[in-house]
Amino acid sequence: MADTYTRDELEALYPLGTVNVQVDDDVRPMDEAEWDAWIEQQVGTEKPQDDA
Amino acid sequence: MTYPWSSGEVLTAADLNAYAGLVLVKTQTIGTAVSSVTVTGAFSSTFQNYKITVSGGSSSGDNPLYFQLSPAYGSQYYYSLIYGSYAGGSPANANGSNTTSIVYVGGGTDMTANFEVMNPNDSSRTTEVVGRCRYSTVYGTVVGHIPIAVAYTDFIIGPAAGTLTGGTIRVYGYNNG
Image (cartoon, rainbow over all chains, first blue to last red; front, side, top):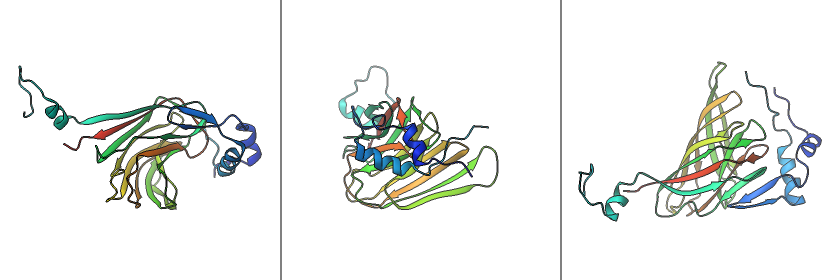
């Protein structure tokens, strides 16, 4: 079973203001509500594993 | 005029329209550290079916890529991935029903994708997606169904986890002939 991300780890990895959303050529940082929902969605996702 | 062309023949617009194969509809450069990319104006009544490729970029993790028509119109996406591992073992399945996207249309740290979308702009037919996915030890093919018949023009892609940086999304239409 692969190790998974906690919310604290994700907040450290992707601080507010560092994650963007894009529509065509318009790229903008997530606002706090979007970022909070996105971080919550990422909790429990698997951490990268080393390739063989 | 009938293919193959002969030396000296003059090709008309009708000839070119009839014999074009894949037509590049839209090219979209991916920004930095984006969680999703919405591509507008990709689908129209000019083409029934499409090929979408993603290449040249990177992902913050080794994850699969998801695809969503926009707007999503609720949680009615269905998909099944049959995959194996380069390390061996038996084939396995990953699937989703009543979800908001089709996952596994691409993936990897270089986030590549090459999948096909059938009928996205035809409000009389539902949309099907066929693709392949490689990330981590997962090597597989996915089939998805979006049973909401709407004339979609836009779509969204993004990594199932983490962010994307750089690379290009290309949308091609299959000439209806």
